[in-house]
Amino acid sequence: MLTIASCLRGGMNKYKNLTRSTIVLSIGTFGSKLISFFLVSLYTAYLSAAESSAADLVTKTANLIIPLAIVGIDEAIVRFRLEGKYSKQELYSAGLRVMLAGYLGCLALFPFFNWLPDTKDFLLETYLFIFAAGFRVLNQQFIRSRGLLRLFALDGILTAFNLLIAYVVAFVVLDAGSKGYILANVAADICSSVFLMAAAGNFRCINFKSISKGLTKKMLKYALPLLPAYLLWGIVSSSDAFMVKYIVGEEENGLYSVAYKIPMLISFVSAVFYQAWHLSAITEFKSNGAEKFYTNVFGAYSSVMYVGAAGVLAVLIPVTKYVIDAEYFDSYRYAPMLVIAVLMSSMCQFMSSIYAAAKKTKNSLYTSALAAGTNILLNCILIPKFGAQGAAFATMMSYFVCFIVRAANTRRIVAYKINYGRFLFNLAALSAMCTALIADMEYLPVILILTFALVLVFNLSEVLKMARKIMARQ
Image (tube, one colour):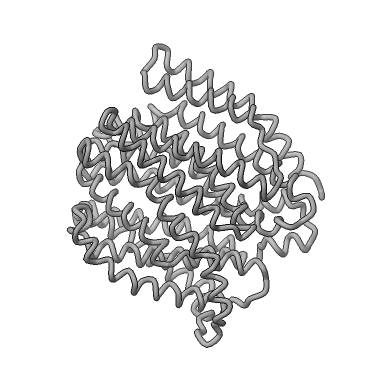
């Protein structure tokens, strides 16, 4: 079994351990994300811009509710499982009971959903989406905390294929439109949970008699500050879509929602790394040399992300042209600033693991509130004047503000170093690429390729330094 703790006890190079965990997780996460990216071309071929916008707003509303429904208990399961003080039965049973109570509480939100124009026609679908996705998250996090990373990876791939089958049935066979899109995701999540319950034996960990009130209180104390943080983070990623729809129109919001899918190419890397880094950040938090370890990992990770962002911007137009339906081709104009937004978000996510390791989840709340406030304020100012492009800028700036504040705050917890010179150079290069794309400058392909090459060369040394540490025996 591949676990962080077992590798550390065995004296494994901690950089090598993090890399092995990342590689295992990448097989599932990258594979599933890549399949999901190409699924965009499938559903954009069958959904109009208006239908795509409706489905997108329903799923974003549901995703805002999911952390509230499961009361953030999934994160508490991971954090307390890594301490090694509590049994699988205690943690899973406590998490399941809290989640079920949260689902019952969500029933009270049904009247609220009925008032919202975006969800009133999708009440049942919205609740099913929340239930299926939340239950899958709980099972995923539980097997990850147990170190079953290969199973976690396999589930990602199987779920993506199940989603492909569900989309084909919903669109090609049933012509089910927006409701088909939502229910296809529900079906894939339910299949995932059933698979994980059977393959990992999660059902054998259900023993409500084993639940300790003291443990449940500790888990809730850790998890509850994350709830408003999740909600505020959801506002950052979702409020622009709602405001674009009601201020500019559904057609433009349809383009904007597709533009949001393009940075998925970077979020592949971020999602893969975060799953492994979150575990390492916790287990290494109180170890000797933690500051150096955090510094080296952040340096290499950020360099890879800079190169990834530049690469996405360099191929943005051909990817949009050949992967996404022609009706959505103009969506590429909104994507450049969203690429930088995802880059900033990934770095904020890196820092959130430091809060988790230190059990300072309230700091996540405060910084998320700052990002959400910035996002809403800029949306109100910019969307009426600049439309979806203003929304993209607002999202980028909100993540940027959050990054600056978290960088200062987390370094008071762990004294790791950030190379701000490298950060500013890469930000300038990526901003230049964004400007060239949005302005449709002359010699655009040449500008993009040369700038990408510059970013690649500038960041190569940091990646090679990490590679040498990974190859070292200890």
